[in-house]
Image (cartoon, rainbow, N blue to C red):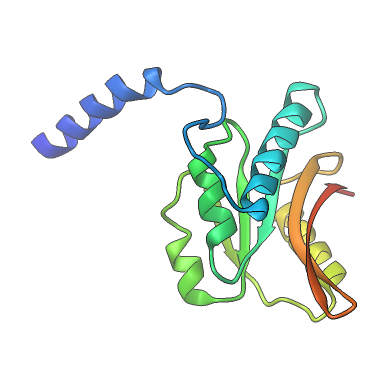
Length: 154
């Protein structure tokens, strides 16, 4: 009980000092990581301007996208991380602000996005009218292209 009380005291003293903006101390070198910061800024703007409950949806097989987003600490923006790898799902239970989901991915990326949004809607993580920033990749001319999309829950 004493250990729990000590942790509670630490949390109560630290939490008020946490800033509400994105973590600016993280230096992002990779373009894909820079895209994640843009996604967090966009989701924050959507929330501040009354466009439903914003969130960020990522599809990952390595966990990299979700971990970087969690480290950026987008205040009030849930990070919905979908993976089809069970070990990655378990790892994603730990990062700040990340809500992981284990789901089979379709060969059709559009179908995968649709299934994820429907899952969030069924579980009431998202409601019709909410705007979500979706980060995924697409195959075009045998090249993988990273995408940042804006989707409204129907």
